[in-house]
Length: 100
Image: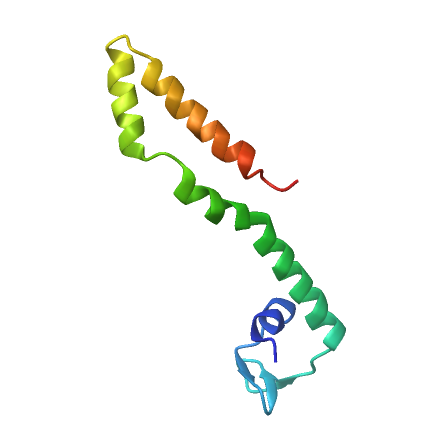
């Protein structure tokens, strides 16, 4: 049984047992409809895909320490490190675009 899809399709489910089914808090059994579970699985997969790019991008960004250093030097009149930081961030975004 796809427990996550069942929970998405039937938010009142509190117990899911592969052998006996899904149940509400009061113990009453929920009639599971496979097409509802399939639609919920599709929704969950789409939600996951919509944010998957974030986990790919995150380790590729320059560190916040680099940003702090660039901001310090920018305050001293040298914007080259800040520009390089922005360029590096833009490359990560370009190489790993957000899905539309």
